[in-house]
Image (cartoon, rainbow, N blue to C red; front, side, top):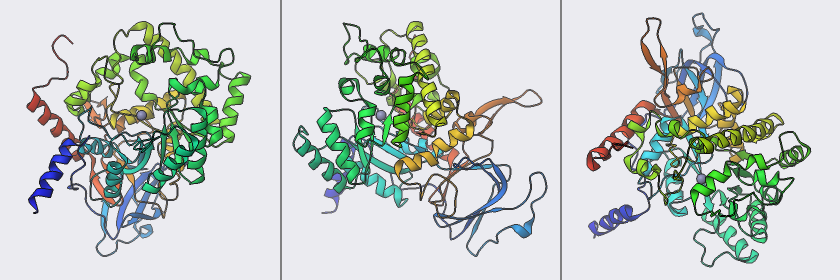
Length: 522
Ligand SMILES: [Zn+2]
């Protein structure tokens, strides 16, 4: 009687889109009290770094932050909080603490990529990502809600999960009328989803869905795909109550001043991804120029609506420099062969549109980025909320690593490194409606922290799992950084150990399949 259900369960798991994460075998704690001693705090709220501080955690919450001295002189022990019985100390001297990172666009892999949840979750946690928003629940809402519950109770090693169901997913009847739309939106909320992810739909459907969802107090995200964007762009969505836009599609369209439809070549076919992505690279140039009246008007209206922009710059990085994205040094050890296979040029895999990609496409995309980044940086300067999302698992951007690349690209757009960290933490929490619990190191919030032994403000690259290279005084190359500890819910995870687990998964699959990342001649 007992064997049968287990057998069915195993069969079901291997048949399901992606393997769920195994029971947690990593991390230490939580403790009745954990004190991180003498660390420099880089908070997510825009404050400059300060240290040395002692951060006091009890179980899974931050209790207090004490200034315990002045830089460069020994710490005054009298100012330090005393360790309670059963408490644990972590020496943070010479290290930096940041709030846990929030990846606002985190797909949990899938069948096409052959990436088990454990692989994705460990890469995220190894990069200090303690919260993710799954924008579409590609493995099914029930699957995601199960992983969400297990992550919340720490029975698996995974970031906290916010589940935004793909609009219409699992509908009994195709969602073709406002009435059916409202029914679906209510059902989605009833199941326990945190929000909805849209890709575009007819205007009356978008309007009904966004308004009902907002009424229920849920959040939303939208990738304004080209098939619907001419009749419903970012401004339409924001007015109807969309809380965040993904990527950038739908924004140039809201900024058109001398046309109403993208200047598609006449042989364009959206299903041909070379067309889709090559022409997208010419889109910002077709929009009103930066600081023009129309550009200002659109930006100011989005600002007045409290709208969040989640640009996911990194996921298009290969478009302006395919070599860089394809040969990034982490692929060798951390990109699972099945994921690499998914990245490879193909007329069928999503995001593998390298049919004919070279200098012309890359130059256009560099210009596209310049115009796009101007908008995003100015949006931030005028008080707008810009968040950090990776959309990883596509286009040579591997989980965790691509998120750190996103931070670098926000920096490139003109953000001060402290503004980058705020986007990666507090702004993400606000966009999720979770700022009471997440997004900064403050008493009362969850004990979610990133600990690293190099200063990420000086070089964001130290946050990559592979660290950053530099030379010592005696001319030896060293690697510094890589997150040291990721703390979630007061549990301390050894980030390097999580990376080692991932490397082993990659090595095992390489051995099993004989796969080499770079096939001879390619
Ligand atoms: Zn996505």
